[in-house]
Image (tube, rainbow, N blue to C red; front, side):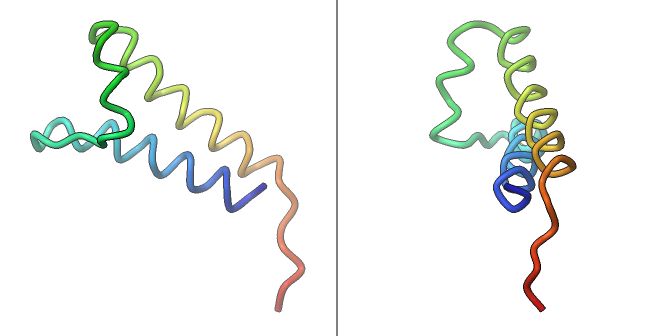
Length: 63
């Protein structure tokens, strides 16, 4: 769960930064249909949920 949470948080952070460079993720392009306020809330929610999953996840036992 820790890896998946980190992945979601990174995707959320990239989806926040990329529009300033004129780019966007194709699979997150649908969030722009509801306007800027809702799209920023969804992007921020991705980061928050990803961080919660990362923090709540157990560290892997792999060496």
